Length: 170
Image (tube, rainbow, N blue to C red):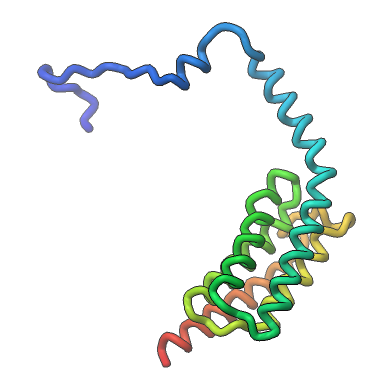
């Protein structure tokens, strides 16, 4: 809009229930609430390593089943869901490399969901990278600190995209 309100238009604000609750007296001051949230996240980080271990084990099991010939839609969706969980929580917990690898694997899985053939080598490369990223010495490594790994994973994604393009063209 031009920034001017026509004279026959009346603009009014609507106060939502959320705004009313957020602005009521009491509660914690913002700084204390942020500090408590950060403390809670630090507590969850220790538990998160166990969560990552469990997710990777379940992801690996689902991939083994897929490699045994069970690459149905359900199995691919299960693998994709586990991968998204790792991607979506990794950065919050300070594991940006894990997030990067999971995101790249999600993109590879998207190509499979869109018709690309299941490429065992591409998937295994990502799984190996995920297991490396969860190791204590790699947990706080950023993707740009391991360019050989990230470039290799990007090449694997390109391979999956070419495979999809070839299948769609042929």
